[in-house]
Image (cartoon, rainbow, N blue to C red):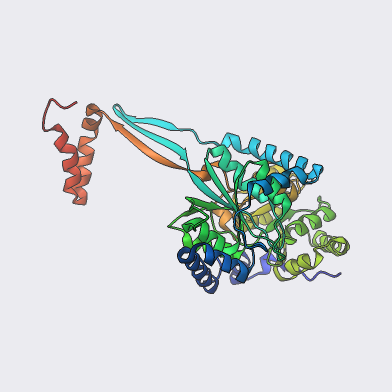
Length: 436
């Protein structure tokens, strides 16, 4: 199986060609966004009946058209899954919890001047929805990644939605993962209709305050449609990976790392950036060698052919600079000084350092969250974390002496802006001398 991956030399690219490589987008096209909005509106106005109809029209519902998974089905799933799968889920859950507990925000109190205290206080949300991808493949790991930070945050009500497969069946491992975490609200629905149900509610599903979790382009489009009425984590496009490597790396490992993300779907961008053209050729040879044995080789070939990239740079410094411009969801550093080079990465969702750090370790087992920004958004956003499941507020406490110290500042700035009622709100408090 010969791979046809686009190969470029960065220094020879025009500025427009370079920008075309960098300009991936996590935001679906306008036509899809409009179609997703229509589905959301149908569910918003039609409730359960519209949700079931959308499941049947677009896929994601169960064969018996049921929406909620019964508690008994969750319990049975956990009791009957293979022992080794349960142990793996438990191990992953433990590590995710360990990684996220230190993220719990702490309140802060600052006295800006004597008698004036500004507190910053964080509280968990009361009800959140976790979207778990399904359909073509089940992702119980994504359930763990969405639910556990919410539990650490102290969210009392956590709702999971996930689509059934093309046969109307639900992954028992996904149900077992929900049962393991004692999530008792699990609904089988997917795509834009699931997002609409979480945002606005139906007769069966009560609305949530925020929706998190990865999904396909329809899920992303629907999140954008409901944003403003409900909180969302961030728009996320196809899973992506970029590898920075030099000739010290093992081409076989690099090939495996590229295929690791490419198998998520034919739209997944994967890239290798290296200062060594001979090394890049060796990686391609390893792809040709390893691919035939993989069940999802067809998907991998599509991703590599349509969205794969090998970028040859003049220096390793140039490779790292390009990686920071690219701002990949997953970034692997396979260089002679991997730890030092990884410290120079300033834009990436999750960074993997050296030969012993495959991306699959982060997807499943290290405890780091795998719900990550894509499409270049890693330049401005980070992984899903505990703080995403709460909100901050400022609490300002002033004594008489504290306000007196601020009185001139308030008066001058209020006058400068022409907002005299602002000045009055301060000055009126000093009209009598007996007020505390």
